Image (cartoon, rainbow, N blue to C red; front, side):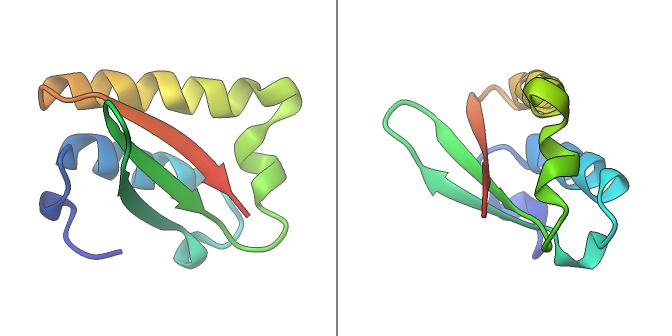
Length: 87
């Protein structure tokens, strides 16, 4: 990942990257990209093979917790973000 300050919400990107890297088996494979959405920025997270299940968690609870945490971090920067986990 490059410099988090190039994003609309650098705090959210830094928090998202840190949390996801701490969960997965292969932290070097984690990539966060910002895509411009309709009303807010969308952060797309790509992880290594086999790690997507870890990030999503049972019934999506881990993914939802990550989304809540990242939205709170984005509020610190005065922005709104959505988080998508992609294959």
